[in-house]
Length: 202
Image (cartoon, rainbow, N blue to C red; front, side, top):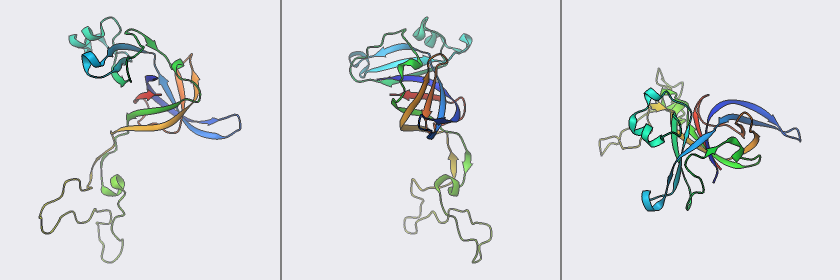
């Protein structure tokens, strides 16, 4: 299994050898360092923990410093589940070169926050008519109650905060790998704004 952490940079147009244009996202990935190997006997599951980014040492508590030892002062720590025993070792460095052009990958990140939104934008409601006595409720959600039970059911689609959800996009393709600058060019859109932490699994 291949894995790495990175940040979203920007979107570009990618033209292949046949001249076909594909929307693509530039990801600045790695290098990341393996900080812990988890196994079934000790932890109950198999996983690899990696660290990415830099953080001021004064902002890291003693417990985390002891956990990372001399591996570095990482801003992010993430785990990736693996099947069986991992071949990685603590202290090993993973770079963009672990991926190749044509690899199918899965990307996860936190989507853009959109604040408090109504039902038309949040859930795609049609709203009310703009005529027939309608005055100022054309983007309202309508009735939410039930007559006999006299309460609002759980899970009713209503206004609320939108975005900042963990989104996973599958079946993206690696279009290009820049080993020198540690960047990946990935087909399609990736969740989040510029600078969002992105998890890449292949």
